[in-house]
Length: 234
Image (cartoon, rainbow, N blue to C red; front, side, top):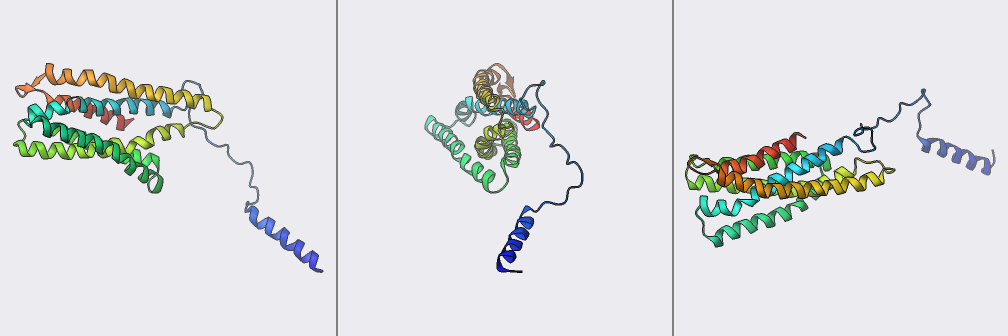
């Protein structure tokens, strides 16, 4: 065998190995496609994503709508302290998306990041609601519970923020670009609808419903907590 034949044999062997395919064992099964929504090209999962986002925005903005009043009338803090804590909480909510993005890209992936931080989110809302029950301990207990709840809420709402919309976009196949574009329109509509409705509903729950002989902050925080539990269930 001359040098040319030896080189040709090596190239043939390399080509066969690099293919890495097992011998055919019959017809391969078809790739399972995700179920569609009402026979359209929209994946069924996006309906749950949209409802989840509506509930999450309702819970966040609903809680925040009465937060300053809660500090003023329930804790009897002055306006300066109430405003400072409110804005510190808001700033933390806009910082924690960095944490969520790092978790999703480098560790857990988008889906697990959404699930785990949503559990943290729900825990924060529940602790915040319990902290608003007047008969539970003294003011120090209420403050500690409320601050812990707010920290967990900030971690949850910010942590899932960079993941949910991207996860929704991932549900679409490449050939359904127009459906993906319409999904984002509906997605951001659900964000604005949840935010708008909650800013009207939770102040009514606080002022028009009385519990424990005073304004019912426990209910005003409890309803957003219930919506967040529903969002987690979705």
